[in-house]
Length: 179
Image 1: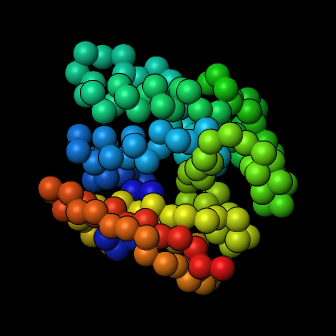
Image 2: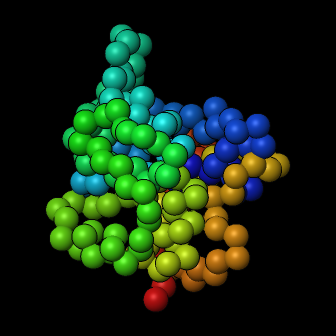
């Protein structure tokens, strides 16, 4: 997840333009995401991410953006939503309910890694104990409020696996959830 240093994925106005990664950070994220075979999204995160189906359609797209578009298109997507009627991208299915036990069951039989995107869906997964690893990219900005990247009321004991600092101050931390 990309988050401000004060722990928000979007600010109080719902904006996240402050989180746009540099080419260096984007290339790093691509390497993190290359092994992902399936993305699990909530409705809002899917609405943000589905732009990658048609991007980069312009000549000004960076090499990292073009690479990520291919990574995203190659993966399966599962969107959890009670308000959507249908999904609009290939390799995507719509599910009405997020049942952690069911997800854990079918995930164990998948090839490739599984990623959970969106703070609301991730909060459900974290609270249910089905998340093994967290990758946090802390962007050097304080936004003062918005949507938290961490689920309210949840206790997570984490082990730091690795960290990396990037040129403009973004810091990646990889944590494993302690069982």
